[in-house]
Structure formats: C-alpha cells, structure tokens
Length: 528
Ligand code: HEM
Image 1 (tube, rainbow, N blue to C red):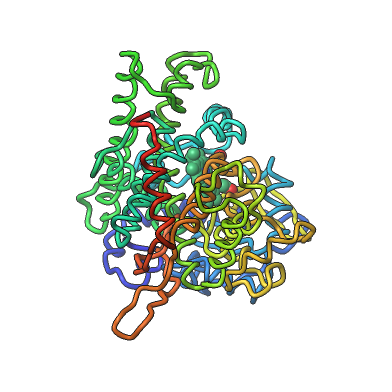
Image 2 (cartoon, helix red, strand yellow):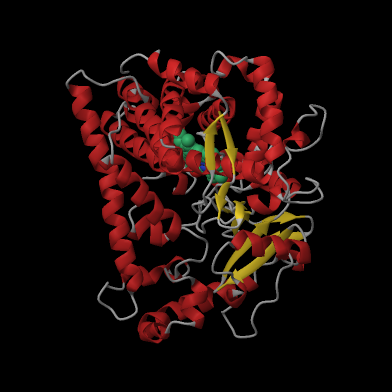
C-alpha cells in the first residue's frame, strides 16, 4: 500500500497523475488561501513540526509511514499536548493528553463529533454503510440508536451466556492444541460476534468469518490518516483504474467487492432464517422484531439493520481478539502478574469451578489486568478521527472548522505525567480505588458522542478470557535454541493494530485444571 510519504518520495508514478493534479492544485490553492485567512483575532494555530518551505506540501515529509502513534507521541514531547500539522491544505490536530482529549472531544462534543469524508474508504471501497465512518447528522443518529439499543450496559449482560459457552470451548481447544492459541482465539471471538450479531453458528473455515476478516483488514489498512492521496484530493476518485499511477483504484475495487459481500451475504442468510421462523435470539432478530428502533419506515429500518449487523461483525471480532492477544503477550513480559492473579482466583473462586461474571466484583486484580491490557497497547492506537464542525478556540489556539482531530490514544495511555513507568505492565496501578488515574476504558474506546457503543460487550469478553485462561493455564515463554523467547512488542500498523504472531507456551496449571475444563465442556448444552 502506498502511503502519502511513499507517493511523494519514492513513486515515479506520481508524475503520471499530472492532469488531475493540476485541476486539484487549483482547488487546493483556493482552500489553502481560504484557510490561511481564517484565523480570527490573529490567534495562532496549535504548534507542531515546521512545515516544508515548498508551497502546499506542508508536513508531508514529516509523516511516518507506519506506527504513526509513536512519532505523534514524540511530537507531543517536543511541541506539547495539542499539535497541528497540515498536509496539502488539510489541517490535522493531534492530541497527546487525556485532559485535552476530554476537554475537546468529550466536553465540546457538539463541535467535534463529525468524521472526515475519507473518499477512499467511504466512496471507493463502499464503506458508507458503516456508521462509524459516517458524518455526524440525522442519518448517523439513526444508525447509532440501534447500537445503543442493542449494546448498552444492560443489554450486553444478556449476551453473557453466549460468551461463556464459546469461552469454555476455547479452553478445551487450548487444552488439546495450545500452539494454535491465536487461531483458537480468532475462532472464539468470531463465534461470539456471529452468534450475538446474527444468531449464526460458525463452522470450521467459515465463509462469513473469512469475508468479515478480509473486508475489515482492507478497510483498516486504507483508513490510516494520510494513507491515500485521494483522501486529500477527492477529485482523484474519478480517475479510472487503467490510468497510469492509479493503483489505488485497484485496491479500492478489491475492497469494494469485499464490502459488498460483507453487507449482503450474511444478511441474506439471516433474513431467510427469520422469515422461516428459525432465527436464534440475536441483535439482528431483536431489531427485526422492533424495527421502530431503527426507523418508522420499514424499508429504511431494514436497511439500517443490514448496515448495523455488517458493522457489528466487521468491527467486533477483531478488536476483542487483538486485546486478548495483548493480554497474552503481556503475561510473557510480566510473569509475576499471573502468579498474583492465580492466587486471587484460587482464593476467591476455588479450583472446582470456572470464574464467571458473578465473581467480577470480588476479583480486583483480574479487573486491574483487564484495565492494564487496554492501556499497555492500544487496539485502535489513534482512535477513529473526529472532525471539527465549527471554528473553535482552545487555550488561545485557533482550530478552524474542517480540522481533522486525532486522539493519539496510544500516546495518551503512555503519558508519563499520568501513568508512571508507562511501558511496564503493572495492573497494581489500578488497585487503589481512590487513585485519580483515568480508567483506560475511557481512552481505549474513544470519545464523546462517537464513543464505542460495543465497549461493554468487548470488556465482558476480555474479562472472561483473562479470568478463565489464568484460572486454568500457565502462560510462559516458548523455549527456543537460545532459551526462553520473550517476544518483542511488535504490532501491526493501520487504524486497528494487533500483536504480530508470537510464540508462547500455554500449559494447564495442574491435573485439576485439566479436569475442570473437561467437566465444564461436558456440562454445556449440546447447542444453542
Ligand atoms: C476491545 C475492543 C474494542 C475497542 C478497543 C474499540 C474501540 C473503538 C474506538 C476507539 C472507536 C472510535 C471512537 C471515537 O470515534 O472516538 C470505536 C467505535 C466504534 N466501535 Fe468499537 N471497539 C471495540 C469493540 C467493539 C465491538 C465489540 C463493537 C460491536 C459490538 C464495536 C463497535 C463500534 C462502532 C459501531 C463504532 C463507531 C461509533 C461511532 O462512530 O459512533 N466496537 N471503537
């Protein structure tokens, strides 16, 4: 994939886009001049790295091509908690502080709830169905309402039986084939989301799961801020695929095909089940029976339900998977943590049953591990970009309407002023209830009116994985030729990030744990 940086530093094909660029440059000049003249009262813009002396380029050369959150964090150390950069006339604010993110994105959410247009993903790859990328307005609010309805705190507890069943099956797989822990977790998170979302029971190498994963991967890769020139020069979206240098159109076409499969195939299956009276309880079934939650117009309601179920299973599984993988990686970096956790589990729950949600209050250390896993590495390190809908002034700085607002959630979670020793995995920091530390769930799940509506469901899944895996298994470094392998904290780039595959050894704690898993699986009802 070409990043903006690549296009301007490496790719000769850029010259072949000349025709379109001339057109685009004219509109850009107007936009830049307009932007420049728009700082009322001569207020300064927020500070940031010095832009290029070459007109229009702005900070393109400064933009990293991967792991942007780390560079943005460094910029924060150099320039302060609120930074502004400009790329071809598009202003972008990067927030590196919890206080500033709260004051802007939460307290002023009336101004900062919009999304950037993102022509690559929304128009070319046909992801407009995803309310997470829609502009703030009446349509978006309808889509958001169905999520609030299906995944508020109370409704999310209703899904716990599905989470517990699939989790028990996960423990069995970890027992019989621990080396494939990554693939087992993937199956489990997929199974949970498909059952909760659509009432669909996945099978081995499931087609719907494959579609969801491929579509989501294509989307998050394309949605990185500045990944495609067309996001800054929307006119480029009209260039045909055969045009020399327009390789982004091929990427877009492949993404579009996946998006359409994602929207249509599972929904068609679910509607058939529903019409035949065979639908299992799910988010989809509940909405089909209560269409007025989505809209008074049944056709519009059905469209919104179709979009919501596609969003749910495109975004839900991968994020929960990534946060659980982070927890496993953390156990290799902080071995003492699992000892303390296992001592707590044995003392509170005992060894003859699995921990369940009724134990949550009594397991403060497990709860602290969940919080620390959400803080230590971020599933969505830069959040999802917001956009200023009006001009604003903050701490004497001018933020013009149209500015893209990026909360560097990774940077905020590693702010030394807030979290001491931020790169260490230390659940203890969350044990003191009086502590003024921010709860990482108020960072990892985003901000204001766009805060993640699936957060209760996600936290429930992560909690169960942490509590039950630690109750039954020891997680330790795999042994290589040179002894123990403690894998580095290497994460993928993109809007969503997860650890790169790493070896690890997952073994039952003792014979009692083996029996507990076997007994728990045997006690499960045969099917849903
Ligand atoms: C650990 C798991 C998860 C993490 C870390 C996470 C994180 C996020 C973040 C950072 C945002 C952007 C918020 C903002 O704009 O400020 C978001 C939005 C969203 N998430 Fe999640 N999420 C997770 C799981 C889920 C699940 C399980 C679902 C589905 C049930 C879900 C559905 C959504 C939707 C629909 C949006 C768009 C919200 C909007 O634009 O109004 N997420 N999530």
